[in-house]
Image 1 (cartoon, rainbow, N blue to C red):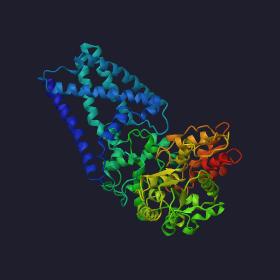
Image 2: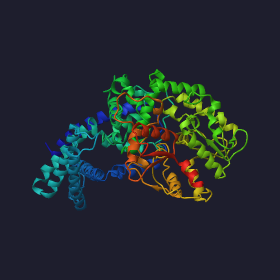
Image 3: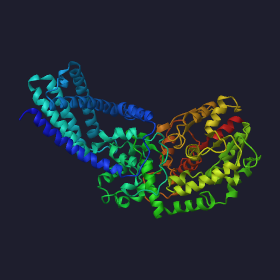
Image 4: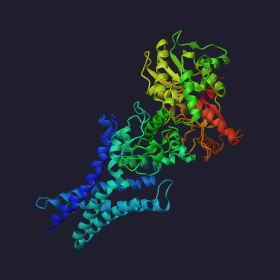
Length: 608
């Protein structure tokens, strides 16, 4: 039999097995809920350029990232060469040479073959001898590494020794065709799915999925949420970043994506995913998430863990399957408009500690509408910081007012706890109050409120911007309008709130303010995009912790701050951070070592 016939048989078998499995995946995705991800093609192509071809997120880990980068590009070069040779082998009458008969291609194959093998060795040593947490030594990974090694070695031997080039050509082609047949059945399906995952990634990673009844079955998730399972490389970066996982909670973002892959394959629950929640994914895993976005920020293939968990939370809320304390908070939000279960008229009680009155934006026009937020309004532990912010605004000459009892909880945490209907109710009540007020801009001292007002609420009453107070203070400093009288000359560290930093990329404004105050900032090892969550987000502040965990995220974070030489002050710009860190400091007895200050308090000191 001629070589072409053998090659045709092998190709048809390989492509047939590949196509059969790929078709089953596509069929499942087509049967899932619709989700619009075909817009802004230019931006999506840029994501692919940066995160697939450029491997940007992987390169954040220099050694492992560089090895993966070289393996990826060796794969791309050899894949191109393979298909070139396959076409030439299947159609021997074509007047084209084989890829390795072209001089510049031979050089390219040799260079990337050597670099690829070196990178493969580094990857193997890392995985089997110096594996970071959550990077398993699986049989599947070993098979894939071995297949890639055979592909590269066979090509290099064929290039170097002409007398065995034909034999090595066949070893190379058979291995790649076998690799193709095996790929969609293995965990390395991500090699095929991840470029699509990146292309269809969220252009606003902090945005939440459209309102739904939640998801517990395969066809109730969106196709993009299911695709996350197929795109997952199971590298463990999400677990290493997750505060819930590292604190000993039940949640593993990596295993969540693994279960989503099983769901697509029909291996979790029944054929359509019935029984997925409770068998593959336990409720305690779903409720452990703090919605901090660390997993999604670190994921090299732009998987979307938080929206998947949110869909399942919506389902559990619909079933009434939730923590009693969370249920009580949601009842309070429904009845009183705040999670504290306190009458709306008490929302402005903190203003009685001031020596001046604050305008009611519903009764007289103001430039800035200050959306204070629940915790800053009701929690007595925050009264000093809230009053300090009010005095700073007044001393800066700002024309500002509040809504008094017309303000309701922004709904952000209710939404992330799975109560979409309650979020919409609270949003609509706030919008109605906004419509009665006269203002130009919104400012808030609460990052959670900042995020939802800025990104989820529609613009109302002509308000052009929503700003966090650190952005406003930074602008006042840059314009010379903030009357600072003295330098504080303190050494401090700073915590980036998840909803200000990762969700909205506000990193520089608070640091500019601290620099203007004369503060010497010593950064914690985990800062900016990599800042460690306090553990309060996603409604977790309303929930009880499991009976046995390693250490609450807030405790881990204050230990990190207290370990810095010469630092005795932890600066925060979020009411929940202030509460969480003060409690954590008391829990582990660090009162003499570390204090927590809201930035407004320090600004007030500098103003005299």
